[in-house]
Image 1 (cartoon, rainbow, N blue to C red):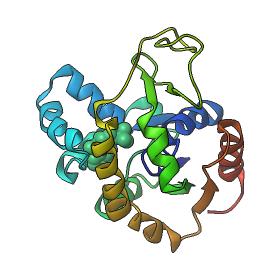
Image 2: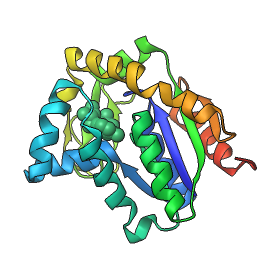
Image 3: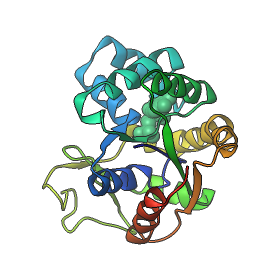
Image 4: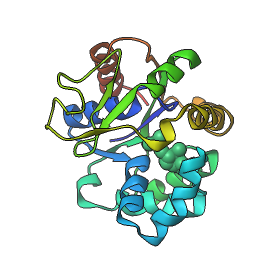
Amino acid sequence: MFVILLGAPGSGKGTQASLLAQQAGLAHIASGDLFREAVQRGTPLGRQAREYMERGELVPDRITVPLVMERLEAPDAVRGAILDGFPRTVEQARALDEALNDKGRRIERVLYLKVPREELLSRLSGRWICRACQATYHEVTYPPRRAGVCDRCGGELYQRADDRRETVERRLEVYFEQTLPLIDYYRGRSVLREINGNQPIPSVAEELLAAIRQDGG
Ligand code: AMP
């Protein structure tokens, strides 16, 4: 089963995609994580992506699409995957459809996590992430038990450079301009489900799981 988790930066996509992938036994493919790994390794692709990421802009499709397509070929993604952060443009959605079509597969669910803009801003500016397992915390609403240390794996917590206020605002603008049109792209089919992302993490997780277990699509 191939599932897309669609939502703004700060909507809880990463947290929920990771939970959902565990529960449904699917690979979790996060394009942002793929880029951050490439940046950290200092690969040519990482160097190219970095300048866009620092500005809060989207990395061009000619770089992004092949990177995600390659990840989709990995053995753990054969049975299916939860896509987190990809597609983010209509062009990317078309490329994904074509690639899956060639394999006789298709997107079975698009889960749209809806969260009000003010809530997104507040979530992103207090966000801390584990360097080792990518678990996400919030300094006010979801703090770790020990400051700076991941509850789950004991890894070190850090704040993303692109979670600065100006960059966050640009990322949200980019989302509303370039990614939100995807809702219309998928609305024409019966795969789209809208989920209220402005609730506690377990409630959102429950609704998402129910949405992928529902018939239809
Ligand atoms: P994320 O962790 O999903 O918020 O992604 C962090 C940054 O990586 C984004 O602000 C973009 O610069 C880049 N990025 C991640 N996914 C994509 C994508 N599908 N298309 C273009 N750029 C992306």
